[in-house]
Image (cartoon, rainbow, N blue to C red; front, top):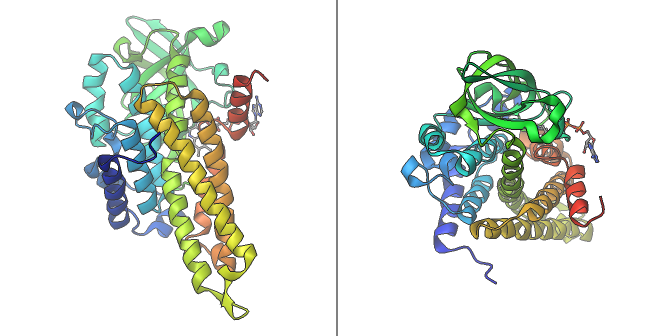
Length: 382
Ligand SMILES: Cc1cc2nc3c(=O)[nH]c(=O)nc-3n(C[C@H](O)[C@H](O)[C@H](O)COP(=O)(O)OP(=O)(O)OC[C@H]3O[C@@H](n4cnc5c(N)ncnc54)[C@H](O)[C@@H]3O)c2cc1C
């Protein structure tokens, strides 16, 4: 057993943290208030290589292995206070880049990976619909082969990066009566006729990530943009979710490390009743719990990174990592607010934003209840 990152992996983590601290935090309270996605910080990340972390160097990516990618994303989250930007980057990586890496044929990889890796093309994934959220099998968006292209019709919601995406992985069914075996994945380019991207919607947290609806109205998609074979959509989606659930919260672990350090510093310097508040057991106990959650989160995530580095399955481990780390991030964000007292509640001190951002992690990529259901199924209980 080896608990250490290689020199290359920890180098990536540290350089990502330094880069993020220097370049990504400017004007964040204002951008959060305005709910604006920043093309500027997106480009900065692209220059560093975040958008192409797992992409082979021949396509212009960084060519990092899974643990290296995880280490870089953790460093990014540590240095970058903008959880919305981290989320947009993760949606791009796990919703679009990784499925193209896993399922794209040579032509699709040649066409799409260079733009995705350079950040010039923003990636997204569109599964959710008004009537299909947790129940992905229930999607109603249809795809019909006609005159050598597919015509897609439907309504997608909650699409992270949707308003700014250049390439969207869309799940649609070839036959709504046929259930899972008809679901198929398509790479839909932003200028596809019949694709209408709605404006960014307002949300509680992750406000610097743009999320919106997509309408597909006889949206014409060339046959060569089908990702995987007909009927393989749920396999594509399932593999994408295995990676996404295992990696999407690496940046959150970086954020939790920063949160813990700031809370510890505050507990040492803030004095009440003639002593630092950290000397009160009710406060130090919260810091102990934050630290333990952080360490346990790392173990869950690194196990996934290690399994994927060995090209092994991590379906169960990814579900457990997603469930544990999201709940841990929410709890630690609440503790951070409590340790900061009234200051924690004021927007200007940038403590409460983490709680708003963290709450979404219990919902996206499958809710906590759905992760529990998956784990229970694995135990033979559901
Ligand atoms: C910030 C954010 C980003 C997102 N980004 C994307 C994206 O990029 N692309 C995309 O396609 N979607 C995205 N989503 C949508 C997300 O995947 C769904 O919100 C999520 O899967 C839940 O679906 P729902 O909202 O329809 O809730 P529902 O499925 O209606 O669930 C409502 C409640 O019922 C519970 N529930 C449902 N079924 C069960 C069950 N079988 N057992 C126990 N409890 C159950 C749920 O856990 C939840 O608590 C995003 C959501 C958020 C909040």
